[in-house]
Structure formats: C-alpha cells, structure tokens
Amino acid sequence: MILAAVGAVLVFITVVGYVGKVQADADAAVGEMTTVLQVQSNIEAFQPVSASAVRQTQIPKKWATNAFVTNIADLQGKVAAGSIPSGAYLQQGMLLDAPSLRPGQREIAILIDAETGVAGKVMNGSIVDVYASFDSTQNGRQVTSACAVRILNRVQVINVGQVQQTSDAGGGQQQGGGSRQQTSGAAVPVTFALNSDDTLKLTYAESFARKVRLALVGGAQDAKPPFNRLCETPQAGR
Image 1 (cartoon, one colour):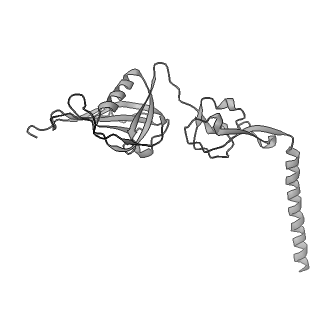
Image 2 (tube, one colour; image 1 turned 180 degrees about the horizontal axis):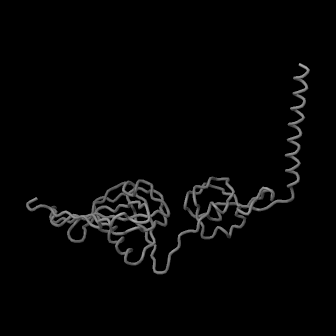
Image 3 (cartoon, helix red, strand yellow; image 1 turned 90 degrees about the horizontal axis):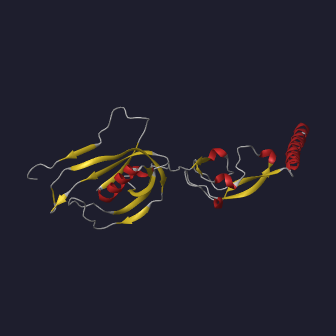
C-alpha cells in the first residue's frame, strides 16, 4: 500500500508538471497574436467564399503558419475546393480560383432534369458531354426520324445550382410540327462557359429537344471516335 501511495503521488506530480508546462507555453504565447479568417457557416464545394461567410479572429502566432488566410481581400475570385465546415480556419489549400470567362466565351445556364443530369454527380468543374433527343410529329403521328444527338463535346460546367421544383404542364409546339415533352419535377440550373456556336446549339436544344441529358466524361480522350448522332426512321405504315 505504501508503494501504491508513493506511485500515486508521483503520477500526480507528473500530471501537475505537464499541465504547468502547457499553461506556461500558452502564457508565453499571449501578446503574440495574429489575425486569421474563420468560417461562420458551412460552405459547399466550389461555392464562392464571400466576406460575409467568414470573420476575422485572432490565434497565437506560435500556432499559425503561412498557409493560413489572413486577409479578406484574398478571397476575391475564390471558391471552396471542397466542403468547408463552420468554425474552420481558412487555409490556402481550401480555396481555388473561380472559373473565369475567356475572350469570346458566353456564360449560359439551362435547367437540367435532376434525374437525367447524372443524378447529382455533376459538380462545378465537371467535364461533360451534352446530349439531346429530338422527334417530330404531325397530326399526332410521327412522320420524320427520331434522333439522339451529341450537341456538345467535353465542355466544362462552371456552376451547379440548387435543385428546384418545376411545373411545365402542356408544352408548346416544336419547330417542324413536333411537340416538346414537358413534365413537372425537379430540375437543376447548370451553367456553362461556351463559345458562340456552342451557346447557340445549347439554346436550341434546351428550347426544342424532348430531353437534354448530361454525361460525365472520364479520361483525356476517347479510345475511339464516338457516334455524334443516332437516328431511326419510322417504318412505313406505322
């Protein structure tokens, strides 16, 4: 029992000494503070990091590194590289340059069906192909070929918005006598940066196609040239 008591005293002395050392280190750091930026609310991946989403706070300079973001001006033109939780201290690796338009590019957004838009897998920066399906009817009967067309090849998504509910009942007449299928459901606004020709192609498809779909693209190039169009002409008498 005497040995146990002695051991307990030694443990107590060791713990007290360690706590004292930690306190001494903390006290030594007081007065040497530096300003860093702390996130006030959750920021989703690839969303802009605005001044209103952060606050300036101070931490001991001893604990800071050059990787910390210290100036609100440094957030200009930046987006989150990944999801940033509230309370995190901003560091350089958490930020990316926001996509910017090159000379001649147009920024254009369209609504994509939440299910056919790769079911939530498309994100800011994704590389996609854009497909559209067309058909034409006259007096309720299909008279021309139905086609699936790849209208855009390897284009970059620069922003994906929040899912929203749509209610497009009825549907207007498509050019050439066809009708565009319009349904109620969930849609996602997707923004692209395109040249003028591709902007026109996307606008046409969004206005007149029965469906517009996105396909995520992997790899630097296709192993073999893919088909750009697949059409089927109705059989006579059908």
